Image 1 (cartoon, one colour):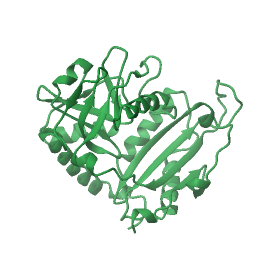
Image 2: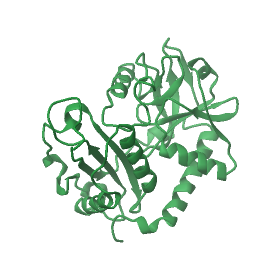
Image 3: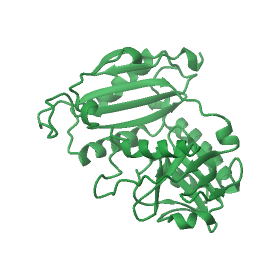
Image 4: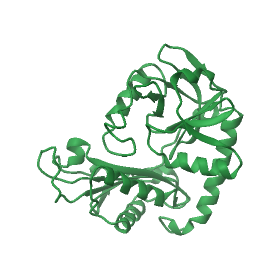
Length: 308
């Protein structure tokens, strides 16, 4: 079976249908206000990558917005399994799984009633294919004028349904001709890309911003994999002025894994260029992470979402 044989499938509170036919009420707070939390993971040979960590982060996001999730973790996992099976996927496919918990349906009122029952929305589809050139050559990024929300206004560790800040940033970057953006905070420090963590090689060190961004699970896995392989990585404050001295750059996320960056356009239109396809360290880290994934899948075969 190839990816084209997978039907994009949705599950709304246990009701499964083709994703194109799925519906929620216009009174749902996720629709009205972006009042929701979500996670995305991908599978490798049917094994969900970092599934426990994704659920831990979902629950933490819910806590940060004072949301009590009505569905148990076991219930959500079973509904994900049902949805994956309904999509027609098998172990020959890698699938994309997004599960979102909205605060539920209620009156049009900013204040969420504490007796609301949360709604579960699951989407399963074929893993989005990235253009091979983005790995062979690298992606381009631009620094937009849009700044990251201050952390005391909106905690970046809330992985929530309101992504307008990031949407504005990547929209500006695309208008500048870039594939993605690198968002600064109001003090000029790097936070993250539109929906991935960003890394640099500075003064021979592999560094990534330590604050103002989502605690990426792929980022954490990269730290772990690199440490086991003897490669030192560090989370630290990175100011925009330092980027002209960076020698390599890459991003990390659940679906991108490790993707090299070939250039960054700064706000003053200065271009910072990096080795095509990633420099020596980027290529090494990508190889390390591939080995880490292989080992993880072997150790978590019991988590497989469908039968072989």
